Figure (tube, rainbow, N blue to C red):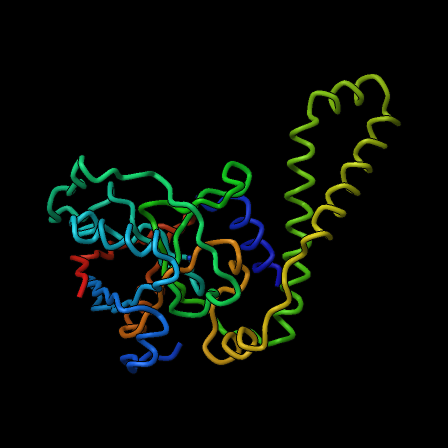
Length: 282
């Protein structure tokens, strides 16, 4: 769990992430939306379906795909056993076409308001979600208008999920405490130089405030559906409720998993190019 703890803290403070699924039945299509997306990659094809109850993200993705904004870009980040990320339109294969820009008559915002519908949509393997900047500079959890990721993830038992919930609580307390330290940096600096006891007392008070703040809104317990899904096909449960999930893979999950096994460097950048040839709305 040491590696998991490091990944959790890193993602919560720094980020801006199944067995093969068969084609959905008509009832499944109705449940998750009518919009089907074909992603042709250098490793093979992945088919997504976008959720209708996250319309801002759905429509933004459709607009960019139809404009060709993603044609020829690279997967820019791969976290093993977690996510494969793309959407950086400045990173393109050398043989890819020039960047395609959305028409001026169609404004291209840098962010989209959050549409976090949790726990209905969670980070099971195959989930499509929007990347974003961390809470410290993005408290409203607005999504990047460009970058997105597909969850690869791994299986986790109910016991592991219970331990994860404790780690999530601790990481949220730590992040809140750090914010309080930043907000009171000037006074803390003064007290440390003039009154060490008062400085220590203020630190203790801020720690208590952080704990009380998170205790009022702790991480939710995982639902039975989440527990069953994470045990059966896996995912990235530490991201639940933090990012907007707006679709899922309905075919080609083995291709996403193959991309997820691409060797990466210390910054989680693929060591060889994995290209999105084109994205088509079907």
